[in-house]
Image (cartoon, one colour):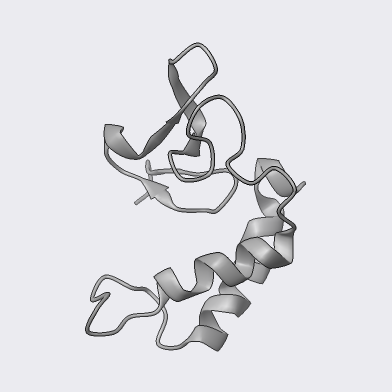
Amino acid sequence: MENTIFCQSCGMPMTTEDVFGKNADGSKSDDYCCYCFPAGAFNNPNETLEEMIESCAPFMVKNDENPEGICPDIDSARTLLREHLPTLKRWK
């Protein structure tokens, strides 16, 4: 994942073209995913960092429904997000 591009809002790896967001002119956003930045603006522009952590954490937990998750439980997902998200462009 050395050359992987990560969403600068939620931290999601953007590994395929369909997950890149769109700029206002319809071009691909190199910074944000389709969930955070679908059409030239943030999907939830007033979302706080803590709200982003709470919305992203469940997607990171590895379980039967999400075998590709990277964290064993919700608390470790929150911890990882609290360390990583503040380093991203949207939250600096």
